Image 1: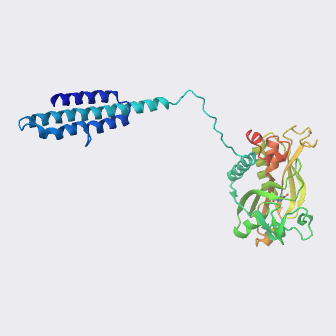
Image 2 (image 1 turned 180 degrees about the vertical axis):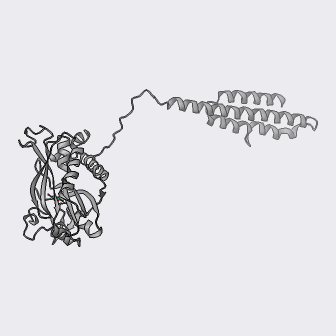
Image 3 (image 1 turned 180 degrees about the horizontal axis):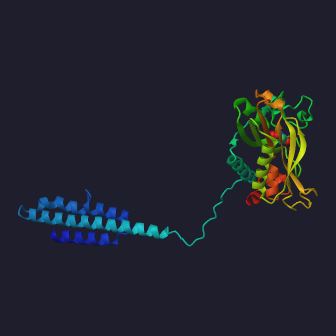
Length: 339
Ligand code: DAH
């Protein structure tokens, strides 16, 4: 029995050394230590021994059992370590591999310019407001002193959604909404999209962008208008640019002006961009018409104001020398990636 025990112990030792994975080691454990295992079987044979031999033999079998258990668990740990090592080796990250380029989004040029305009006017103390794109005839035309028979109300210029409901043709509607809800002193801007039924070409789009401005207070004059707009033009185009105020007409301002800057391309000599004029028109403005103030419940004998509407698309195309306005709306990545 002693010899048998020694043989089993040795066989188990060899088998443990040879086991190459956890499955094999588990099989080995069952083979020797399991309920039907060889060492367990040996213990069961103790009955055939003499009472003197039994304790000695029992001790030896238990010792052998302990040794095999130890072997099995040590080998198990080793194999586990080996498996992890192999896995790590197989999965090593090659840090010398070039990284995949990250595609980073950016701001659309119109957004860049709009943000710059907002910064300029905010630094002059203007609040930034928002207005609805779907407007009523009342806000878009009527209160702005645009008479019933004015050509701008024509279906050919305006997108009507229903009777007297339209897509705003100008951000000027924001003036009325502001004066209805705020009392002077008022100093606001309202940037946003506007819509007109224009044919698409290099300089026209049915959707474009304006930034409306409105100042109303006691004693506001044309000088204030000129000072603010001149400073704005210089901040956008630089100190060297010339600014020109031309008399014009808008139903909601009196007097009205249009503001030009010397051509950013040719400096005023005349070129393709300015159509030989040397000047580029960037905005319309004027002193708020007394009728407009009155329609909002503001007494024109006490308060005066000025308003302006800047063409954001025009500022963008001239700043970045973009020759076709359609590029701003096509969302071509190759174009947008340049900004
Ligand atoms: N709403 C005008 C347009 O779309 C631009 C404009 C001109 C706005 C004069 C004004 C203004 O506030 O005073 O052409």
